[in-house]
Image (cartoon, rainbow, N blue to C red; front, side, top):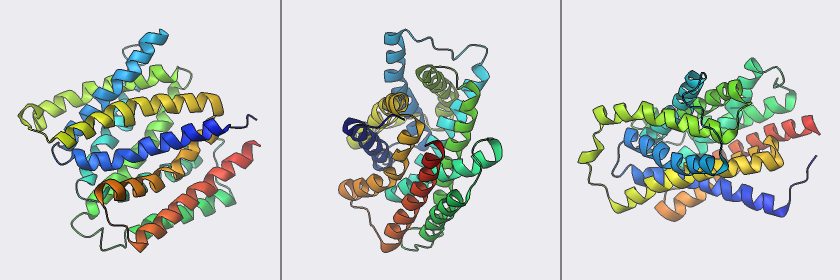
Length: 295
């Protein structure tokens, strides 16, 4: 088993910061743009670095091959739906809550994997980790200072967005033999195709006069948090494997909470801190169980 170097941990931390920074940037983007526009611009700008890398490496894009229906389905479930749901939800809740809610993805994937993947069954340690993690989320919903009847649905939609990532990940296994850059480029293309007509008929972005900070944030979300982050993820994944790369999951809510306070001065209550600790601990326990299983 390969032992990660100090540089590997630096890259993993950098990836966590990039993905965590997406949440406060989504919040800033909502000041000027609607959720469909944010989702479209994310996939549009995110596709640029990925497709450029594919062109440079001479990797064939198979978006319109015989497997186009898989790319289209994954593009909708793994990009269109969660990008829209998160942007819609963050408009009404603090971005640090979104970071914590979205961090449930590894826990949800463990639950889904138990039922749909032969080698991902529950064990005692995993069950404890899942219970601790989801208890943190339930506890977070009891924070009446941040989640009330006015934004309760928005918080649930963000959780639904995290579930979409999990389902999309399971579907991606159907085309797992293809190059990661090809898969990402293809699903980004289909996400653009799906979102463009919806955008034109629902939000008409040509009539928007966006603020400068919102414009910068939405471009950052596309180029950096979507495009460059996925390419960095592939680099870490190829060099160090899935278990090492998956450790980014319990760093994201921590950095997301810190960055939201630094840039937006968002409120951090005691319940937020307790929920953050519970979710991070739950993810850590689940990941350690996976790690022990392969060593």
